[in-house]
Length: 163
Image (cartoon, rainbow, N blue to C red; front, top):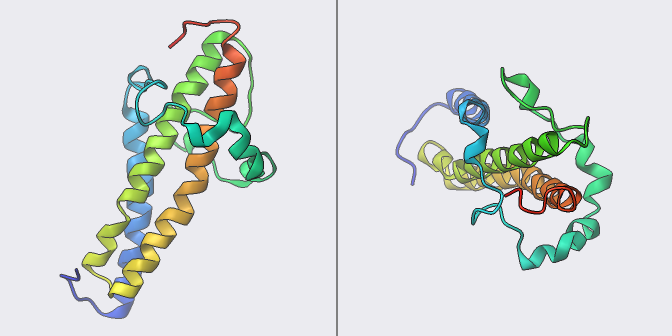
């Protein structure tokens, strides 16, 4: 429901600024949280039946396009670069798995914030902002889940009771 009415240039500037603030603000907040608080077995992060052990992600050809998505982890002090697997040590794999939880939560929050755009946009523009929120965040969520599933299987023989 539109509550605020601004001239079109102000509305456009507000839309751009709001998306930047949401995505970067949430990312900064997530980086500031202790990574140990992200539990891969928690409800939001656990493997689902629809993932079919990773076959869903293979059908979506994630491996072919995931490297084209931006990785904001290194943009922040204390951030974690998830673009490559630089070690296979159990400690590194555990950290990487926890970071996929952090990244996934960041994108869920960003996506869930998209209805805020209805406050100052016409309904059809608010709908476009929600669509943008989904299209901009869902691929990142899927990649985080795909990576976590693969890494969990990789670390399981080494540390079966890690989480």
